[in-house]
Length: 194
Image (tube, rainbow, N blue to C red; front, side, top):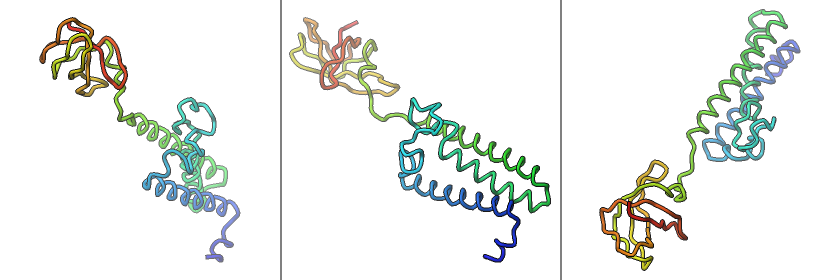
């Protein structure tokens, strides 16, 4: 192995060195991601932010210059440069080809990660989003805030059964249509008939 390495020209040693190191980092990053360790910390800019700060306002590693995209660039650059030089292309052509392929891989990883992060969303419902929406009484709601019943309402695209009260002077029976007017403590919604 050492004989092979020392027999290489300096430019080939650089291309192979970059390609091998970046490939190792890529594999480590993949393993960490599969183990749930690579998403929000360990390698991706320590806190998931991109190095360039261009997209730092959302802190999810979606910048064009992030650890993932740099590793992708270096992997493409190293291996393409080594292949080009072994194919007897001149050094400037090999560097140009390596840079183009590295940049294309960098953009590919950027767009793939942006697509994956756009699929990510919180699994918890924010019942404040129900204010102003219409629902159906599931369990009768006592009059004058004397207790709570339940309504079924679509919140954030999901049908939810939620505790509800009313300030109305009459009980609201099951099956009645109601409008959410206010969010109360403990995810209880205040409703009125429509």
